[in-house]
Amino acid sequence: MIRGALIAIFRIVMRLYFRRVERLGPPPEADVRGRVFVANHNNALIDPIVVLTQAACPIAPIAKATLWNVPGLGWLMDRAGAVPIIRRQDEPAKDAASNAGTFARIASHLAGGGNVLIFPEGISHSQPHLTPLRTGAARMLLAAAAHGGVAPSFQAVALEFEAGDTFRSRCLLVWGPVHTVAELPGFDDEARVQAATVAMTADLDALLVEADTVDERRLIGQVAELLANDAGDDSLAAWSEVGRQVEEAAKLLRGRADREVAAAARAVTSYYAALDRRGARDAQLARGRRPSTRVHPVRWLRRGLLAPLALAGVLLYWVPYRLPRRVARKTERDTVSTIKLGVGLAVFPLWAVALTVGAWLVLSTALAAAASAVVWLSPFAALRWLDWRDLRDRNLSDDEVTALGAARAEAVAAVARARAQLAA
Figure (cartoon, rainbow, N blue to C red):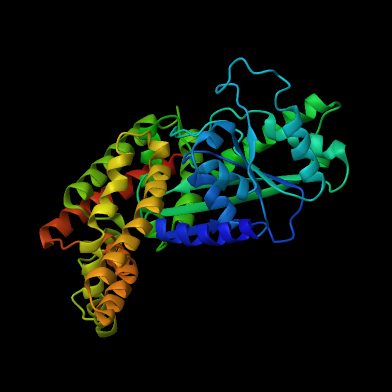
């Protein structure tokens, strides 16, 4: 009961934190049982929250035991059904059998029809690629198979973030294929553990857009955005599908067409630098126009009616809106969103309650009721205006449109020349 309420609350929280959460691939149905979900780990506590709130079936996350030392977080983890695991990097002197009881409980949970989520990299990080997977997930899977009961399976789920440390960006879940223990080769348990770990790695590699370096990953993402926008689809799902093709093409071209690839890299990098200088987005240039001068009466009427409430939200919540950013400023990139979310969940409700109490203390009943409504509704109006502001097309002069259009055309042509080498 409590867990269901928590999941419902966090679905709302994720809807507020992310502008959009997209899904690609077949997600697990509500009746899925005995499955180990394995995911990449780039965004600390945001990662399990996203997976748990987007899956129809109940899932118990497996987390590092040190999280239970954070005041209040341990209680929350217990209510969510999380299972603590002692990692060697947290306790270097730990006994090899220290997690044996935990593994046995997880195996029993899986064999009884429960599901678990594990991040087999073992750490949250900001690398542009997977780090080597630990064998823990595979060992849990094999232990559950030996336990009897529900035949266990495993499924990879890749997490991609438009901007992992930015409020109101987009998130994508890419669900991979389902595998059973019976598919694993090997004559003994250790061989099957290794085979399962290799399969999990291969599935996550196939679902993620990866690169050797951060700069290379950024370039692949920019090329993917160009091609997806040319196809008329600016969704994160389209970016992911195209990005994985670009990644594979880059691998095939390495050593075969270095000159063409380098030329494409220069053209794309130069184009995106020009976009940044003007505060524009590629989606706008892909449409080949400046902001429309057409008046949309219904849209502008809706915005006009919402404007006073949005302005009130900006004024009333300026301090709690800025505070999470300041607190998260000096943290590691992979924990920024978690810090922002945690601070926001603590500060915003307290701030709203304080404003409400203040209104009832100093205003008449009618005015206090009206003020309370503004206090609780205005931040949502402000979020809506924030999205409109961030997604609007920039006002560009004719010369800017011409220059950016030419830079974009050169970037697309350079990419096409490099891709042509695949057929050469």
